[in-house]
Length: 220
Image 1 (cartoon, rainbow, N blue to C red):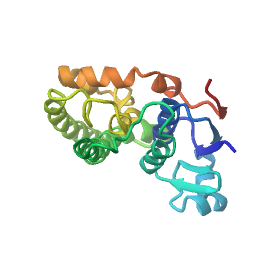
Image 2: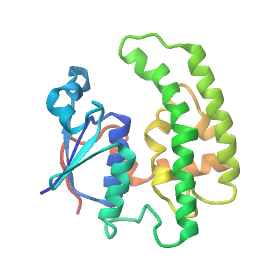
Image 3: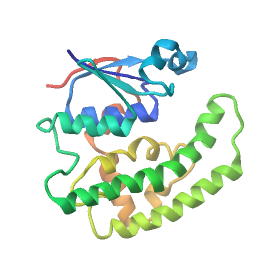
């Protein structure tokens, strides 16, 4: 039975899971949840995802939500499909990976998502952008990326010398920053620019960047 991903084709966190599915070439079906109609707040949805957020997956009777947890689960369950995205043998490599994951969640996501909320999502829903909030988020993110520049001067990727989930987790919000009016990902410094161009040009991201195909997604 094919794995089912319940989410929206354009939603950032749904894309976070989808890029891992594409990276590892795991067949899945996208069951589209229409956020504009409030389908994520319907009783049937809330039984599976009590916070009323996308996405969640159903995998042979097992239900899981939270995009980063889903991504880790997929990489662990399918170690022989596609690249291994979570080091699990070498202690130091695993520690660097965990450091990278923590960096993304603590030092990138809160500020990138806040800027994008103000510049993209609020106007989309008829609300007014708060320029002060946007400017502060971009200023803070810029300072955080100064630290990225130092880290990436010493290693190719955020979690070590191989691409991992720690890198891929940046793609959904990082790719929207330019649309939101910020060129930070390509102007911060040579190391951040090199890293960002590397991960954002991956075939898996190119396949879903403009939207995840609805229905069954198969791979040869």
